[in-house]
Image (cartoon, rainbow, N blue to C red; front, top):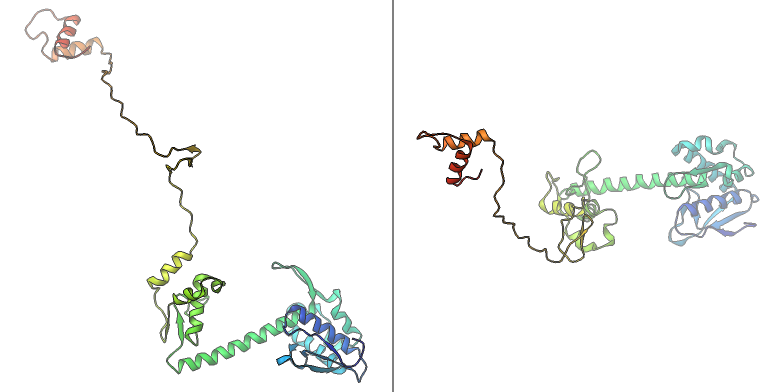
Length: 304
């Protein structure tokens, strides 16, 4: 920006890139003459830069730009521990030293996540301040909505949805409870697929928290829960394999093997004599011999 009345930072979405550009524009504006300034889509009068509502334009003078930078530094240092030593002191900030806010020596290395990078320290800190403020605002609005719901039939509960301590979470209306149920049981991207059907399965109620999980919710959980694939059973499909072997389409029946051969057993002489005498050999007197015992047993149908 080189002169009075220049329009800067045209983005209508306050993200990291927009915040970074807004800080850079503000540093440039702080170094303009006393009667100069800038017009932009960013409002610098609050605790952090914010997009002007309804596509409006905000005017910032060079003096206001320096004051805003000092205010931002104080707010970021109060919110973010790194900024206490990582950023320049607001008390020592001048239009000339403000340029350091856009230099690499006051940058922050983002090492975590899927996008490691070095960012403008003040802009990154202001995103934290903005997030904290928006979170507090949402919490205040939710508390007010819960109070209104409690006075008009009771707050709402989504079955199986609890906080980190295991307590049921309260919702101000059925819509929020229904979406919370879907998010809990189908994941954060529940709305990307079959949205209406998933919402229709939600189990919610007003006034009383759930004390147990219904069969309907258990069925959804069973579908969503990761399972270990079972070990496949042997298949008889042609060409299919099991443990490395190829099977046929129809297994060939195995016929039982029937044998008529007798099992050959070698008996000792003493055992043969004992068997024979036990069966009656020699009971009528006469000579008892091994050969005679064998003949006697064979006559009884016993091979020996």
